[in-house]
Figure 1 (cartoon, rainbow over the protein chains, first blue to last red):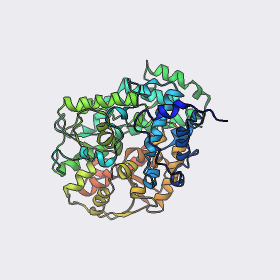
Figure 2 (figure 1 turned 60 degrees about the vertical axis):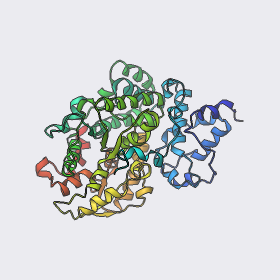
Figure 3 (figure 1 turned 90 degrees about the horizontal axis):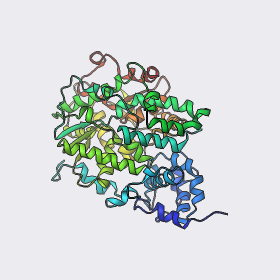
Figure 4 (figure 1 turned 90 degrees about the vertical axis):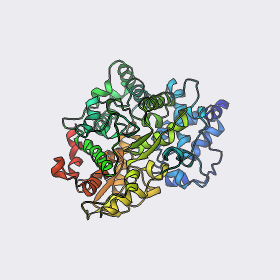
Length: 135
Length: 340
């Protein structure tokens, strides 16, 4: 039997950088992962959505073995931000499992929630161009 | 077997918070590459190393220690090590490259500065003020520490009047171009990789190279920054034949380096897999990230040369050779053995 923590999903999703709602559970991330992670990203995210805190705590090695290489994201048909989701789980585990209070910002939240939420490469492109649109 | 995750993550975060880098290195080791180049101190445009190449010999030294620690009883005292590290820099005592360690990586940075000069740029450098980007602490999910550090780096740019940053590695580029803008108010910097700058400059090679090389794309450059064409254009124009390995470009295969700090053995297994893919393409491998460089070298057999792209570019476009730099491209492949 698994214990359900109603606060888990809310806590992990407190910042806008965790989003697994689009996951189709298709297994493409499984097939493409260079590390052959187990439990695989889709299952980890399901644990969060269901509030299965014990399962997340048991998955420390998987969460921290992820390369954040985004190979899975490059193939994901639902464009789930898998690497950022895994990073959110690391942040959660750093505090919940290892007692690292500094995992979160001073206000207690992930930093993404403080400055406009998760961005993507396209939206960040202006920072790679010259002022005035040159280059 | 892995290292104890909590204390290891905590130690790395403590180092960033209190010492400005995940692995503190002596200031002279961070800046000696620039000696004699006459780079101005600061300015609107700076070459920003983020200490990544300078960290490579220290990372290699730390990695060897971690491999031994991961399989020993000492690992259970990692929490104590973290506590002690807050008072005395334990990691500085552990990560100590041997005499001469880092000379080849200094050359990589000197190559880049010279190439930018040929492209008509004379960027400044922040010397001892320069800070590591915090990339590893970001990736490990210690956001409180990382966010404070990012603001510290940004404050430095503002204080020094920097408007344009030319980076030398994918991790620093990703942090400065993609992550920092999300969390630092008023962030207004133009961030480019030196590979983009050189590709746009239209440099003509002074010496034509004729070898076949397998190109290892960095995950961050290829998938997060869309930088895949520039290195191919630069190498191709230099005369090199670029052989694509299985998994290339946007679908490149990771070198294993990102988990080196926690799972050194898994990182090495990942690097071996990638090395097998690369050696099937060519007997010489070109990297464009210092983390990829150190990890693939560790896994590469003796007959596979793994070389930073800046060495090839300097040889082709700046005619910098072994004679002028007192070593060969391949010589730095042996540096790992001298570090410990």
